[in-house]
Image (cartoon, rainbow, N blue to C red; front, side, top):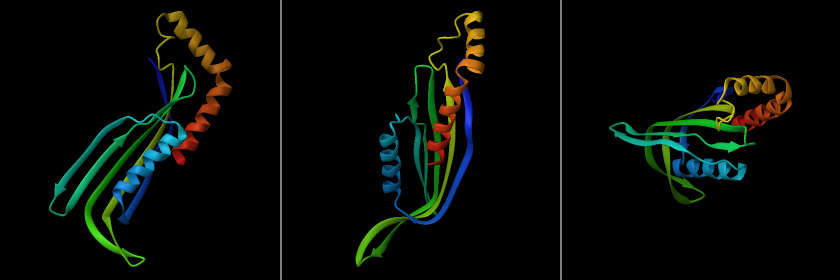
Length: 152
């Protein structure tokens, strides 16, 4: 079984006020492309209530470091009480959203994600030895990359 190590555990971002939901989503998408991540969108729901909309998005982008290790970031975004408002900026009327945003980030380092070292017990044992002593330097570097990207 591939090992999935939690590098960054539940980093939270809370915001309440004006924002543009479409621009925020496009900014996240652009950042993922710039950093070389492949995006996997687990869910994207929008519910309409009497006090406003609720938008729930779960994205899990991933990037391969090697054939043995890859990085994945889990991003949960929950926007509640979202209402459309018109704001005057520099003399122009601009459509924006008002509401609450809660974003949580988790960063993972996955090793042996292709399950190559699990076919026999001796290979699994060798992989454990390999991870603990030989590949430890690279694993530490990969964990630093995961932490940096998740915090960014």
